[in-house]
Length: 524
Image 1 (tube, rainbow, N blue to C red):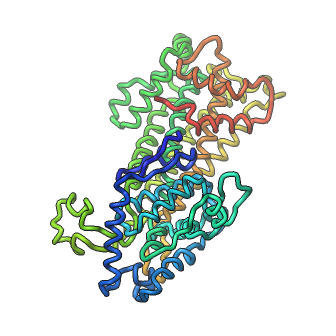
Image 2: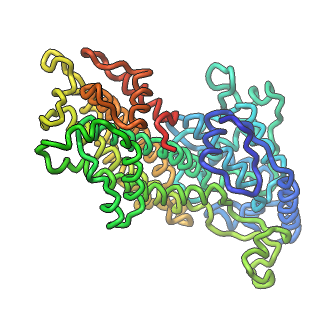
Image 3: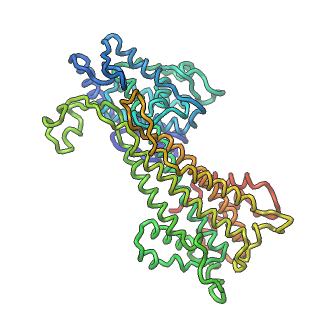
C-alpha cells in the first residue's frame, strides 16, 4: 500500500488516493509536469501586460470581478484571497480527507490548465511527503465556486500560515514551525495562484474517492454476510439459479447471484435439508438479496464512474490554455474557431460540483438498501420465528438468562435509521452566494460527508450480521458451509470468539468492522 504515486497527465484512482491519504505513500511529479506548467504560466505572464481584464488575475473575485487591481497589488490580491476565504467552522476534517484533497489539488494543477508555477505544485507534494497536514474546518463549502473554504485552509499552509499536524507532533502547531522543522519554505503567491489553489472540486472528489474505495470493501463483506446468513438460517440456494437472473437481465443482480453461488459452493448445509423441509420459499431478505444488493452494485458503479472521471479532471477557473496544450488539437477543433484562440485564458464553470453531488447523494440511497436488507437478515436469525432454522432466540446460549445478540439488532436498526435520514439529498436545495453572482450551488461537500458517514454505518450493520451469522453456523456443526464462507468465518473467529455467554458486544462489532475496512472479506 505504500508504493510511490507519480502525478502525470493520467487520472488518479481511488486506490491511489487511499494510499496517499491513509498509508503515507510518497508522491512524485513526472518529468513532463514542469514544462507543461511553464507553458501555462507563460500565458498568464503575457496576459499581465496586455492591458485587458482577466478574471482573478487582475480583477476582484465573485461579485467583485469588475474591480480592476493595480499591477503592484496582484501578489496582495492572491494572498488576501486565501486569507479571506479561510472561513470554515466546526470540527476539523480527518487527516485522510485533507491529504486526499491535497493530492487531487496537486494533480489538477499539474495538468497545466491553471497557470501556476511549478513551485506551487512542488510545495503541495513536499507537504504531503513531509506528513504536514493542515487543520481544515469541515463546514464552509457550498461545492460550486470550488471547495473554497477548505481549500483556502490548505492554501494558508502553503504560504506558511494557519495550523497543522505533523509526524511526532503533540497536537496542532503553527504551520511555519512545522515547515521550518521539515526544511521547507512557504510560497510567495503570484498572479492567479491563490485563485488556482482554492478553486476546484478537490475536497468532495477526494472524500468521494475514499467513500467509493471503502464502499467496494463493504459490498464484498455484505455479500459474504448474506451467504453466511443463508446457511445459518438453513435457507435454500434455489433463488440463486442463474436462469432466474438471466431472465431479468440486470447486471448487478446477475453479478450478486453468481457471487453468492460461488461463496456457497460445496456447502454441506444446503443439501442437508433438501428432503422433508416444509418450507417453500425463504423470506425476501434471503431470497431477494441479488435483486436488492444487485441494484446497489449498479448504483455504486455509476458513482464510481463519476468519481473516476473527476480524478482526471481540471476544475479550476479560469482555465489557461497554452498553444502547445493537447486540448487545442485533440478535440478536432480548428484553433482559429476557438473563442479565445489556441492560447487563451477562458472563464467557465468546471468548479461546479453537481457532477459529484448527485452521484454522492445516490450513493447514500444505494448503501441504505444494502444495510436495510442486512438488518432484516439479522432480525430473522435472532427472532427464531423459523423453527426449521434450528436457531435459538437471540442466538443466546441460554435464552432468558442470556440476552445474546438482542441489542446488537437494536444497534443495526439505529444505524439503518440514521442512514435513512442521510438519504435526503443535499444537491436539490439551492442557496445563492456572492451577492447572487454564484446563484446555483451544488452542496456536493455535504453529499460527500453523508456518503462517508453512510459507509461507516453500513460497515457496522454488516459487522453485526457477520457476528450473528458466524454464531448461526456454529449451530449446524459438524456441517460446513462453502469454503469461501468458512474462510470468512475463520477471519471472524481470529478476533471474535464464539458467544458462550453474555458479554459486551461493542468490541466484537468494532473488530469485525475494522476487518471490513481492511478488506479482509474482499472477494476476488
